[in-house]
Amino acid sequence: MPTYDYACEENGQVVEVQHRMAETINNWGELCERADIDVGNTAKDAPVKKLATGGQVVRSSSLGDSAPACASGGCSRSCGF
Image (cartoon, rainbow, N blue to C red; front, top):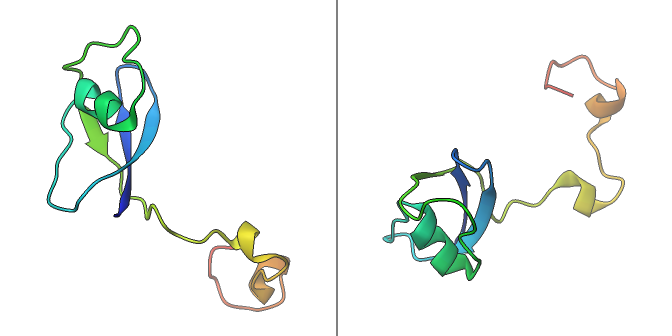
């Protein structure tokens, strides 16, 4: 099942949950229920926004010492490193 990150602007928290692609989570109460966490002081109807993240993306730090050459200045391309 895919993993999704949701952000609540009211409390600034980001919560990761799993659900089917066809499902939608719209508010803090639904998100907390899905994540099995307490709503705390945040209103259950506070809106949440699904973040454009790849919940199952492999981070370069988990690959060991395999950073691209340009990360250490070893190439002339402008690739953001």
